[in-house]
Image (tube, rainbow, N blue to C red; front, side, top):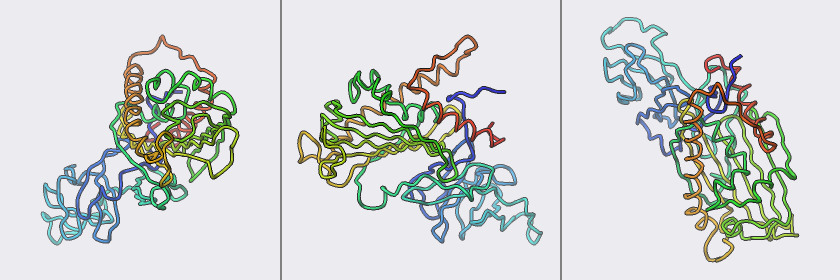
Length: 359
């Protein structure tokens, strides 16, 4: 049996972020590659985002190079037209002739939910599944910033990285990490495995009391010496949503002194060695930073995290380059802190094996 690694997993039977609702303007064609599927997206006259195979069924001309004409996509090569269901409605070179059903386009299910547009890239029916919930983006209780990167590494390597805090030192030693992060994940850790929205769910949480945070984390969260609750969740291969909550040491559970932030790491694979990474950092509206309460947590966090994220990306791209080399003589060492993370990767491998197109 083929041995998959985190550097070559590609799961198609899953929901992935295609973009923000504002990325899809009415009657504008947009090509995207997600999970090696080349798709054309457009927002129809009735304000629905739809996605199809971006190949005209006649000569494989990219439909994204055509135009929207009278509520249908017109291929820029021979003028065949396709409506918002993907059905072929016109073949100009065969006026009056019956249009074969096979002339229609393959469609991909799309859901616009909680401030994001998601697409299902698999062959199976997604009826019993749902994208991860992101209500914080639309409920008005949080403020946030976002940024995007194209990363030359498998998206599962990013998921592994996001579930692991022991890499904070030394990788992030100049920004948010310290030596104690290497042991923090070993004590008080709880791992939960289940199905959420029909997809594998793994949550790694930990509680740490009397913990001295780095100056940067202490400033963003308002408490340098703190009781901490942290959780990172993976729901399917679309990425990781993580939260950190801090109270002054000895005051765990007291809401009036609680500070928190949430991060959403949304990964849409392009291929087995490249993915689109969307990062969203959220804090409750009006939450002050620690050193200067007139400066919000969000204002303090944005320049900090714009220094942290490239550190992760550089590391993953170097990892991927090494995975791409012959490795017959290499046997990796698994550490204690890796055990929970490997559960998440095994869940993705199991999900992939159900999809013959990507196994």
